[in-house]
Length: 187
Image (tube, rainbow, N blue to C red; front, side):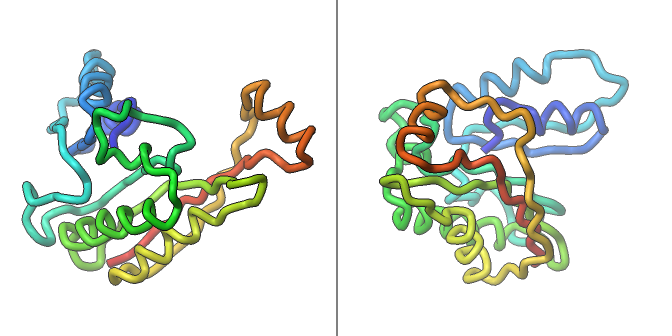
């Protein structure tokens, strides 16, 4: 779930090796373009099209660190319906969590013992009611064997919501969600 390639850029700047995966060909293209700059370092960065629910390209316990930033169900569509298996096309929260559990199993399998997996995820609303999406995803990671080392709350300063949501929140009397959870899991 490399998305627009921010993590890949940081890895290049910090001389960190990286395997960047995404199910969306457009994300792969964006990341490759984002990496097209001069740097004093030349780390190994591989960018591949792949579904995080099937990491069969990797051996068991072969990865030192994982950073994952999944979609928050279908809040933002990261691909059109042509990529049906894209998690951002799932509206049902329980179904989304079922699919994230598959991701968690694969991440657990490929991560080396005593190493860390970080997940950045936020919550959502359904019918004006707050939904604990991050907590539900965290539970799935715990279910597959990860231990929760930390829950870092990332406050979104200067967050600009669209006028639509600012207006809706005032009309329907609900607050905008202005934070995300950065869960640090240990295997």
